[in-house]
Image (cartoon, rainbow, N blue to C red; front, side, top):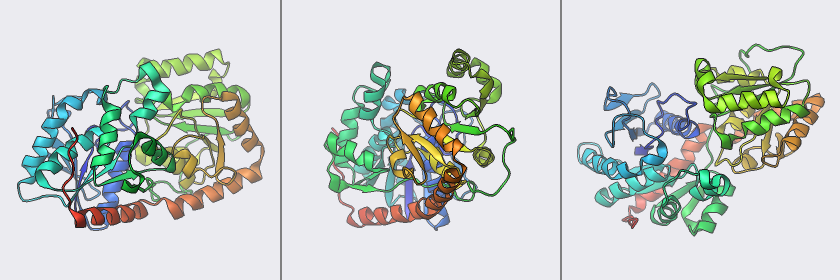
Length: 404
């Protein structure tokens, strides 16, 4: 099939770790690679954010990345991109009037969905929508700190009613969408996958002290990822070290406001000698860090899906996570890891310490985690399920209603 991926702010070529570069970038890159490997013609359309970017880049994984001129050719905060979506969609329509027209459009994030629907109105190409995050959940947890455009929640509701199919990444997202007024009949649950070649139990591991257990936590250095909870929990895990992977490169951590807050908090909690921030790590090296850990801790306030627990599981590392979003689907309580309430450092610390104290249980979790990731979350399986959805909507090719 000819498949157009729309990912307006999250390029699959981006360096991960920045405020707006994380799981969606990885998802789009890995899914596109899996679809290309299966023989499909995949083109990813993302906004041009630098003047020296070529219009088209051929990925080594077999798909094309097309840089769309919409707004200034410079970095723009994700929440400030909405005014440029009309320009984005017009460019798509002009582009698709040439020799290559997609059979299906897969939009990633709500603003991509708006651009996709507008283009669909002109071309008749069906639209599949993955939200990656919902405004109603962000508003619930961040309150006045939420910088999303005022109409985001309304747009997301209308998108769910207008696109040909909504791809939910977990059961929790289905419930949220139904409460928003999106019909359950329009949804298909297809979770993200994990790269089983990059993330595997066998391979080199990052250096560590043999006599000190290692807790690993991974993600963008933003408040909602719960790193402050992890640092506070370290007071309840007195013998272990905590390694935080993510954020800017190591040389820039000193100037990163959130990294400085975490280090100050570690001093206040008396755990500064056991909390280490290493900054951004190239994706191809992340397996070394997972394999060096005894436990992966994922403690976000909310999480649409959460790739890092899956990556750890694929490496044979048990997970202690907060019982939110997609983590409740990927981590099986008492089988592949343990779940605790969000923003509860005492419960988190106690769960981690119990697991570190029980080597047999930890080994059983690791074995089950590896097997679950391998059997249920390969990108090839995810791509296969999505191709079925693409085929269904392309066969119908009904006109898509337009968001007001």
